[in-house]
Amino acid sequence: MRSKKEVIKLSRFEIVTIEELLKRLEKYSYRQLHIHHTWKPDHSNFNGKNHIQLQEGMYIYHTKTNKWQDIAQHVTLMPDGTFVTGRNFSKDPVSIQGWNTGAFAVEMLGNFDIGCDKLEGKQKESLIKLARYFAERFGPESIKFHNEGPGVKKTCPGSLLDKKEFMKEVLAMGKVFKDVEDGRWSAKYIEAAKNLDLISGNTDGTFHPTSPLTREQAAVLMVRLYEKITGRKVVEE
Ligand SMILES: [Zn+2]
Image 1 (cartoon, rainbow, N blue to C red):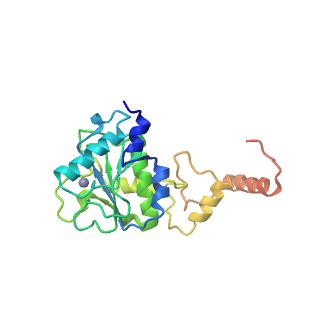
Image 2: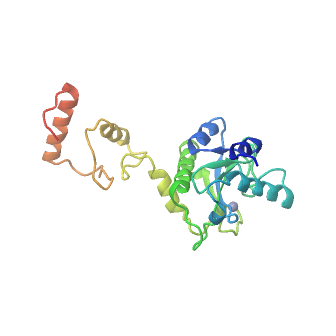
Image 3: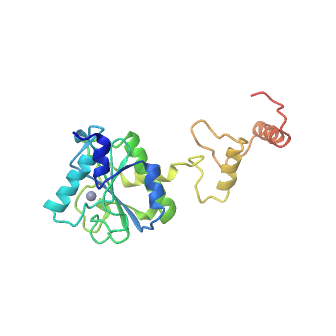
């Protein structure tokens, strides 16, 4: 019997982390990110170790049953947040009819129709990081759900997922304060002031950028600035 390591090495597919995937994507330029769910296999078919076997199964289905030249998707996102590589990243996917040119296609392993699997934990985190990468480089409009495609009748990537809500989460990720818009004139200054520990915002993650500063807040700010510049601690917090 082969060890797991050997199986991975012998396979045409590889398991990669989100960090590794984003590093590999640096070499390419895409117009769109296409998001799908596999529907079948779903979460119940994943045992934490069979990433490659599941991908091989999809490869066989796509090439033998569907008679496609290769597996349709560039990557499959597993419930543990790792990705399994599929089609060569430089080739167009079989993804959304009419939109395939210059697209990068991800299939999330699972059935995300209401009442079936849940998109959560590491799997959700990796998807949001991937979408964030595309939003930053190619704009938020570059992110497409399969069901947005021209004439698509499917629910893919699942009726559980609301595109508007999803995009809100994608655009809020990594922001210093959730109520400070990226494009706001003061955003860079607010972020810098936070990174310098001059301001901390509210406990709910908001900053209220247009609220007036009170006299007590001004006192704190001035002392913190004094401490920063002189390197002398004058108030113990
Ligand atoms: Zn789909």
